[in-house]
Image 1 (tube, rainbow, N blue to C red):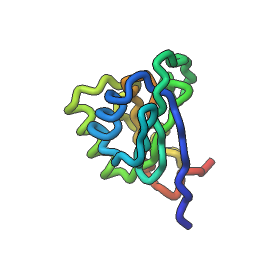
Image 2: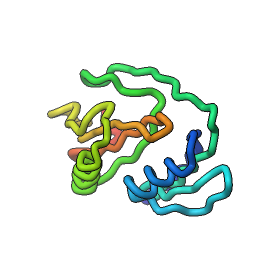
Image 3: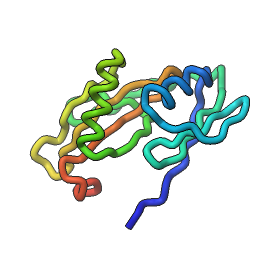
Image 4: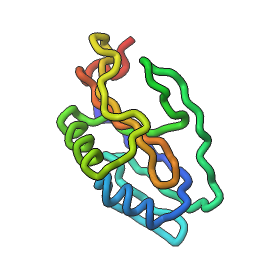
Length: 139
């Protein structure tokens, strides 16, 4: 069964920086846009960067498998090859990772490759890949 795409709207302080980050660095195709927002195709899902110059990130972290995971965050689950390609591209671009590319929950049903980084407005993003995609929701 194909999953329906999700929609997420989030604040950014600079649309040009968002366009360069999401469209350029992450390679997310741009959809519709206006003077105060931009749609992006985020791995088959619709995310919308809304201009909010006064929005400030709310830094908070929760412990997960020995790492301080930023909350809130959003992201995508890719296949392992796409995850590795993106991790290599982000590392080559000098991205400052909150949590660098790593494997967590090793040996458990939820084993996954993960990385966390911030967009130019401080929004936290997690990109992950499951060792076994069938275990995405395994307990």
